[in-house]
Length: 407
Image (cartoon, rainbow, N blue to C red; front, side, top):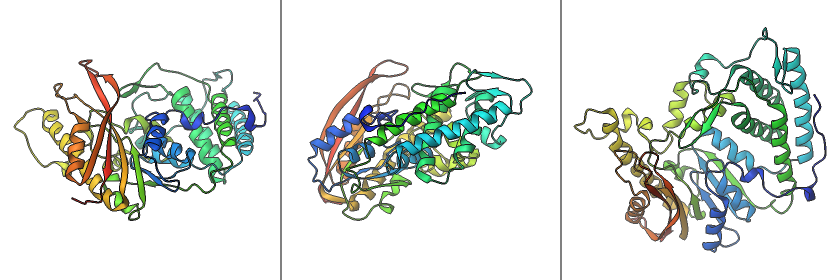
């Protein structure tokens, strides 16, 4: 198998392709509020639900210091990796080609040709431990693509250089999800067309080259722009921040709906060894702000309704837990904000339960106001159709100001 080998030149490529790829909300929205808030040049921008790092990357690109908090380990890994620009893009590409050659040779010795999608029937297939497999959606990935994926990840993890290794792994996970797995993504993640086999190495190398192209444009000018990422629970946000240290918040927290946010990242989490069994998955979900009935646990239950349906009993609880969790977050955030700090929360209406509308933005505004925040605006960002009723739901940006009043 022959791979394309060429050096990365800064002048040859567009800027930031990889770092603006597969983001939870558009980077231009972050930039809009960075400009609207008219922040001083040494300001710190916080994203307490940073996901894969949209706000953090965009803040750094606009020369603001940034801090991110994320409860999902795989999203935390992605965000901290995407913010580390201190390595050679050419070395990244060269290392990837070397690894690809070794993995290609290994697979061929085992009877698999990744380039031509050919294999023998007698090969031994690598797989995850049984307990780890139980975490995954059934048929998330077929046996041969799983075998290839594990082989590539094992080879990458032998690298000692941490930034190189992390970026190669991030590119690998992205390739597995989008090119190799059977997963499809909509309102909820599910299993689509089954791929008995799919090429892994060349798509991975293309992703690595895209990262290198971006990094080649980010080598200079950002050395003094600080960033931090923390794996943690945003409801306890004061544990990660210094007093009076944050001038702005730009974030998109989970919405109170029936979407289980952990399902979308289970394959990556298991492949990277961040989740090894269902108990570890439950422990991680308990650090999330409660946003769906599947994330409400016994210790969360405070009220009982006279209903027969388990869903009916828990929907009011998840709504209570969601706004209660957001209230706790906003309350614990106050000591870390400077007076006059501006905040933008991207939130969406929901009508998951008997089509009863939850005006998330309006309710969250009332919660914030009760905690001493000043509501500056509730701006329409976009609309989207509800899954069942097709009624248009509003996604809004709740804009707040911290007055220095702790309620």
